[in-house]
Length: 363
Image (tube, rainbow, N blue to C red):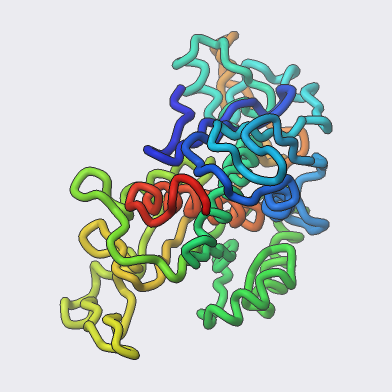
C-alpha cells in the first residue's frame, strides 16, 4: 500500500476502520509552530456525524491524542504523531458476510490484491473512517498556512441533484455552520434534508458535490510540468474514499465555451494584477495565479445500502443476494467537506514550504 502524501510536508496515515486506532505521522513541519490538541480537535469535530438523517449511528468520540512532535505547546521539528481510538466498533455484520462482495466497495479488488489477508471489517484501510487521519494532518497544515494568510474552506453545493445557489465568500463563511449539511444556501439545505430522510426510509443513499475554496494564495505555487499544483490537488482529493471526479474553476463547462468566453482577462485592482473572472479556478499552467483556488469534487452515493443487491460469494463462487447491514451514512457529503478542506490544506502547505514562503524554524 502507498499511504504517504507530499514531498516536504509529508503525511503517512495508519489504522483501519475496526482496528484499535486511526492516526497520522506528519514529517517536515517546521519547529516552533504554536499547536495544541484543541487546534486539531476543532477540525476533527467538523468530520463527526451530526444529529441528522444523513449520518451514521456509529458514534466515535474521536478525541485527539498527540503522541510525539509537540512540546510545551509548539512543534519541535520532529515527526508529529496524532491518533484517535476506535471505540464504538461492531464487526458482527462483517463477520457474517465475510466472503460476500459488497457492490460499490473495494472488497473484491482488495481481496485479489492482498490475497484475502486485508482487514475486511468495515472496509479496513478502504473505509471513510481513515479520513480522520487526513483531517488531523489538515489541522496542522491550516496552522502553517495561517502564517501567510492563506485560508481554506469547503462547503456542500449539491446533494442528490439539489443544487445550492452561488453565494459570496462572506455569506458562505457565515452560513456553512448553520446546518449539519454544511450548505451555505439555507433554503437548499432544507430541501436536501427532506430528500435525505426520504431516501433513508427507502434504504438507499445519495451522493453530491463539495466545493473547496482557497483564498490569499500566493502567485507561483506549483512545480510544472510533472508536479503541477492542480494535478497535486486533484491527486490528494481523489485519495478521499468515494470521490469520483474533480474539476477546477469552470471545470467541464469549458468544453462548451469559446476562448473569448473562457479566458480570464487580466486587470489592475489597487495596483495589483488580478483577473476579471476566474474560469481557471486559480491555476494557470500548473501554477497558482493569485486568484482564489476553486475546486469541486463529486462524491458518489454511499455504497452500503440496506436494499438487496445481487453479488457473488467469493468463497463459494456462487451468485447471492446481499443487503448490507450495519451503521452507515445515507450521504457522506457533509462529513467529507472537512476532508476536502484538509487535503487542500495539506497540499497547499507542502507547496508553500517548497516555495520557501514558510520558514523552517519559527522566529
